[in-house]
Image 1 (cartoon, helix red, strand yellow):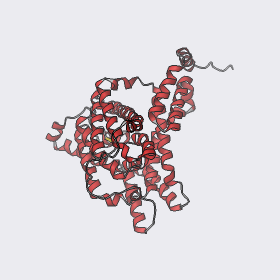
Image 2 (cartoon, rainbow, N blue to C red):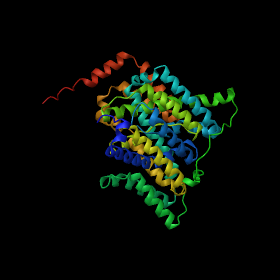
Image 3 (cartoon, rainbow, N blue to C red):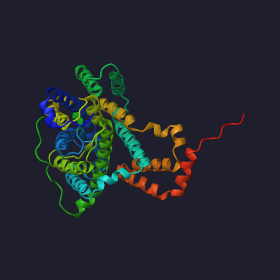
Image 4 (cartoon, rainbow, N blue to C red):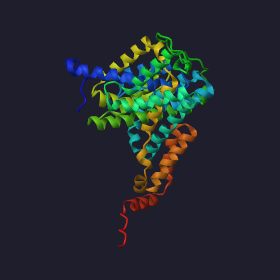
Length: 405
């Protein structure tokens, strides 16, 4: 289960084949999620796809965790979205560049190592709020009086949930997209599609153009968003790195991950136009389904994604939005930590921790800003007196007396 060096992969045809096939599967799994997240961020789908190619390829060399997949992720899209809706897409580039610089500074100051001290209750609240926000972002795309839109949404969920039971070689979201897009195209149905969300023309874009004045007003607009991108992106990346550490029983360099993510975001901002971070779902596909253990898998994923973006852009433009909404609703439900709300779990957990988790969720959902929610949860954890925490913990651990006969 150890990491495999890229040099040993190149020397072994069997290892090389395994890593490349893992990359192909990962690239296919990336497409629906990245396109869906571009809608949340308020940018053209191709922007997120090209940025994902840059992010994935850059982190293949710069990241501190081999086989971890980095792309335009939902948590970052949720942070960027409000700024785009309020001020326009022109402010994304300076916000992303500033976020990348902040992440590099985090690495130089050793702050990446401090992320492990974030309380478990805050982490649980972070995950739950992310699931809630992703779900509500999809509602406009499937809540319709058109029965066909609702039917496609339901069919998507059915395929994605059922297909893995009989076939695991191809990602079920990709099968749902292919079948249902083919159905709508051949039947001549007119439905909202990815192409309606923005241009999906073929070819590669040039460098991202700087379109805003370089002054204090621009800084005032971008700094809250940049700080959120840096903090949320780094948190999700380090959480994913810890997950892969456990799955592969190998360590990773968290400081290198932070610095690498900052540099990759700067590159993606300049060529692509949007930031990103590690993606838990696609990383699991790469490490578990593809059994990838080296950086070669993410290099392959980036190159395959680039091929798909340039060669199949017209096909992707015809994907119905209700199909992507179905996929993202499943992602939202899988993201949410359901055991944290089970009565047995609530009974075992000290009530101050449950309160911190709920405050974190409430702050994130009400503001739409994941960083503010995490900060609110940490502040609440500090405000709850240690004596109350200890008393609640002892009460939770004390067994209930046996009933009298």
